[in-house]
Image 1: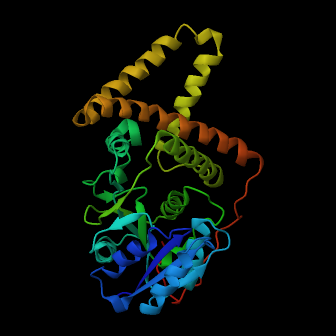
Image 2: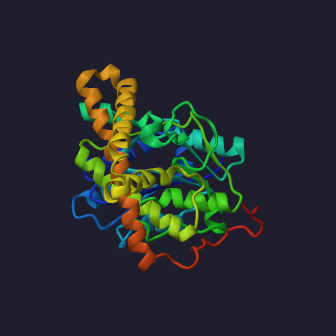
Image 3: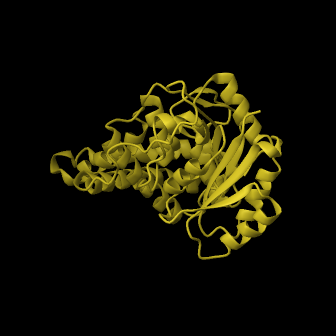
Length: 341
């Protein structure tokens, strides 16, 4: 039975950390084969106090200091300290099926993949979140990303969170410690670039709680756009064109507004966009009623514009001042003959 390290970054999570740890303790994978490492970013609330109290009752729980206060850096600290053959990356703000860890291990063994995960299933707890969940089922919302579909299965370019064979970090290095967002997609792209395999399984079930307002959603997707631009400049390409679509939308809209030659076309273009997003809002949001449809309709341009503007901002920021390491930091191999990815 393979040993598993749960890798979880945390910062000021006193409201959620106990429930999340309890969900890990409820996993049906053998408890003696699991260690739980939490990288705390020097929380200023009671997160560390609560973790320390839980650790006295469960010695599998260990607190790893994360002075950089970034998720990517914290995950790196965890992998360096990990004793597991498999690293299962978890977030505090997610809900895991009791068989989550076992399914991850089984899928790794069954597929031979280097990273496996499930779909990014959202839980709606408010009318806005219901509308957002509806929008995220649409290709207009997520660009056809397979990891958003609970029914999809097969080899993909990325998954939600992920469970990794340790040799991934011995071969291609850790998460980029300077990445503020997009650290998982960037790591997955390096896996693919080295010939590795990433597998999406509907049997691996995890839910997350999405943002609860247009303002919060816009801030989130702006940061995603900045991170995507950083990844493109660092690695030189994307495995798919999907991340570039919002930037193309924003660039096209800016051109229509800025270039007098295109002004006659602008009303038609913007009208077509409004009709397309409105029709799609009706298609995916009709169970929510008129108010829900209107919210979905507002969500589409929020997703597109905030991600596209964030991507442009990231290009401007990192073209002039790249901040990534020249080469990834590798974790020392514990065995002399590991299969290269």
